[in-house]
Image (cartoon, rainbow over all chains, first blue to last red; front, side, top):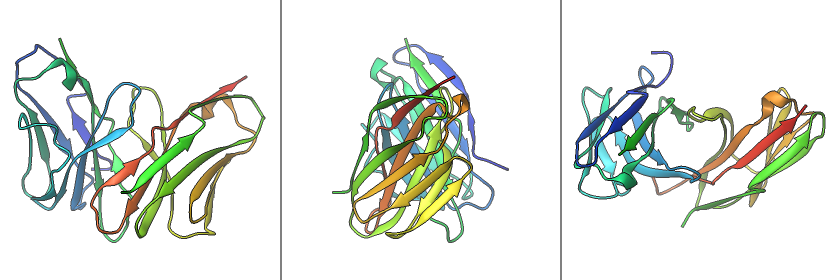
Length: 113
Length: 110
């Protein structure tokens, strides 16, 4: 696609439910990142994929968070047993070729009530 | 550990009043310093990548400069549509992560 695509744009879920957030990176981009942005906070690194592998998942806050990437393209971030503190914008970014720049999607706004 | 500090946190300018935003950083082996613009409810929009001290890049009313310790985003004769949060990030060698500052919220008044 022309840009990084994320879905859903907005998600309201009840505490304790599981949610899945999807990211479709720019076509041909092999590197994919997930970041989290809480209200008034900076961007917090969650996980990095190169192809289908995740060499760095050090930013995942707890074992309730997991992510996978298939076919070197689409990635899914799953949050199990959501808590109110999980409410945030989840941003996906991708990088391709020899460039060093990452390009972001519009984010998935998650509200846990 | 790589770090990024942006100042000021917030800035109000009159239309046409030029100013600069600061991004101070410490990084091991700079692989790039990045500026993004973020509008409310949107993802960060890429503006510039700088790689080495002395480098400058321009786009419309924006100009980004880089030294070994900081980067400036100069805004010349800003317009209300330049109002946004401006984010700075670095990528250092030996890590996969991009480290972001907390941003400068810019408001340009007509």
